[in-house]
Length: 163
Picture 1 (cartoon, rainbow, N blue to C red):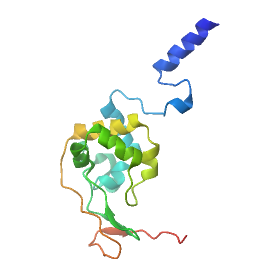
Picture 2: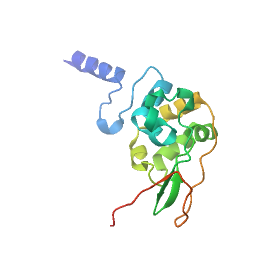
Picture 3: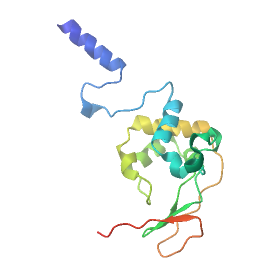
Picture 4: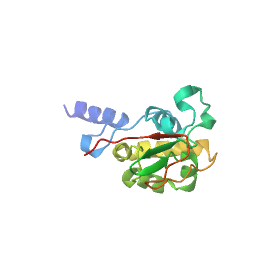
């Protein structure tokens, strides 16, 4: 009986399955952290805002042209926000600084900060590895505009329900 239990624990360890779900967050398993990060940015919809042309072309956008931010604005009661050039951001930060943003970062809509806070550190590090592999490229996105300042096109106006 002890032999079967020990074997089950060994298999669980090899599969990355923790003894207690509370002890370990789920994470993506891939051939490398870079591959996991590329997958996560794709299924996590990062490209939807941070890659110009993604909505029209999808995966036809060349890998080297992805995640360089956008000049398309998101306008609402908070002002106007723009999707950052994640490649430049990752190039400027250490991995611990990147993980801190995922854990505690806050920012303007429509960035899904709640989703990032729920992501495992291992997955956040994989996204960082992917962005570092892509390397810095492109220009910084425009700075956010305060409430009451009308952005120049293109922009999308978000109307939030009254509370």
